[in-house]
Length: 306
View (cartoon, rainbow, N blue to C red):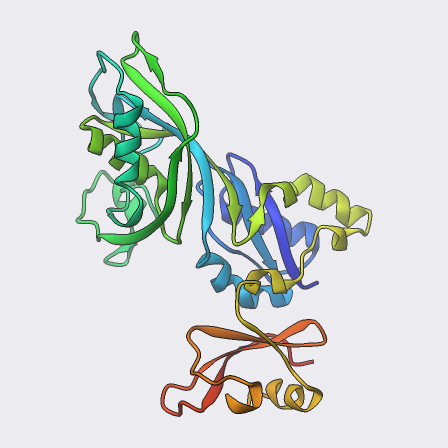
């Protein structure tokens, strides 16, 4: 069993929980996920099976889309609704649409984030959430994140009694982005405490929520011996890579991991990134520019050799 399973992770489960359950449902150990989702977040979780595990890194590195809600008025330990309140400032009047949209616009492009204490980032060999659970505070490393778009998708709702203001958003971002922190920083741009009050991942690694199946649906497909109906080919993970089709003679060499010349592949210039080499409609290997010999390409990863 090889391929990509577009799983819809439900709230209350870790990404590892999903992998553990799928190993039992699918009767195979060779399973991994292409991008962690917090337990409180539901959404698209790419699952790589068999040879699909060879392309996990490319799925983790790709862009993601989230839809959620920001609430102004208080911040929490976890930066989302599950944490304890650490700062509160009751709003006496709502922010205008212009003020909110300007604050969100400041968050687009390449930004710098400080990961939340309740996150899996490692500092001195320990994950930040381990320090947080022990009540310890450590200096957190700054990280770069790419925000391709960050838009308000609803009218803000002002709750005069609670002193809060909330609105829904959609964000398209690169790997390693903390949407919780994005919400908090939006509040900071407005000068008030904030947190992320809801989040769903609607797209990841080219997979959309409409394609996804739940664990229960996967189990049902296995019982019906119809799992192939929901399993996608591993090629979906590298769909955006430049592609070249190989001749039979080239394929016989590529599956053994030999160097290739740019000339025989019809490439006039050195390549950047990875090149996907296909044979009979299936990806065989990923090649990259040789670091010293500009006329040659070398294998980066062989995906199929039989």
